[in-house]
Length: 464
Image (cartoon, rainbow, N blue to C red):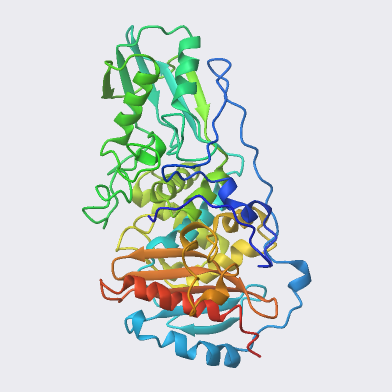
């Protein structure tokens, strides 16, 4: 929910052999106005074929083989190093924390490590890992246009893709484009469109999450969750303002691309067996997971979770998706008692996760037993360099963590959290989760600084 500036940076010596992550900004397009990188698809050659697709990146190891024998810090040494930063008053008097050794799973330090806390956007770690564990890596969302019930009518059928681009400067790298969909429809022989029906039946239930703040949509943090939208529901790429009816806004964008700006746009359903006039497909699943994590994109996270639900025959609703994500994680070995979700982006204050569940998820995702899950680390922000940590780890209290701390941030009013991985001074890979959910509403940014100081202690500590 924080605006990301497009960056390219080579992340030095973090011990994570993640080829795509080293240039995370090259696979993610977030426009901030001028100078945004642009990557667009080619025109669709026929009504049912798709543009040349972004290749699916191969998963790469997280645990560097030459570091597996590095000495593990001792619990007493780590506890001594963390004692002062964990007691920082900026954390609001309640900190929930756990640090574990990724290779062995040994708990090296904790404070209230099993207690449930409001996770904010660290929830996206769970959503990303559940998605990668459940949905094939080469999966791509498909958006279709089919013939309507009467002449001049076409139906835009949502396939769950939140990244569909309305214009020439898409919000997301590798996104399918409305222009290509319109070109396919015209190639199928459609010339005069008077009505665009938008079929949003793939998702069910409310399009706003339980426990979301009243200003989450108007404030630009999220859009209503519908199975078809353009640019994450934004009114314009690179801007925060969102549509209150993103599915109908996508229909309007299609009408314009078809040269029919005055066409009526209505919700409805496609007829069974309707003739397909055109299709476009999104970037690969792993790319969208990366984009969701790097920019802390709430819309992407919620739509990924809906695909987990669809893949497992669960209802494609907030409740169904949250249950499907939890079930996928428990199946991997994450403790069930540490997960209570009502949405999958972390916007809801009703979500509760324990540090134990977060570190277990990170450790499982990093293990050699689950190579498909390694892609979760490709999108993880990097202290001082990329994503929602790009502007952090720059002061004296945390600068030592710049380039080493790779973690997902979480911020709500009165809540600050941070969870990820880091190598200590000996080269040992550690997973950590830090959650401060009793911060004053005016002290959230100060709590971020305090959490950064805790995480920055780890790479500078051999702690023997």
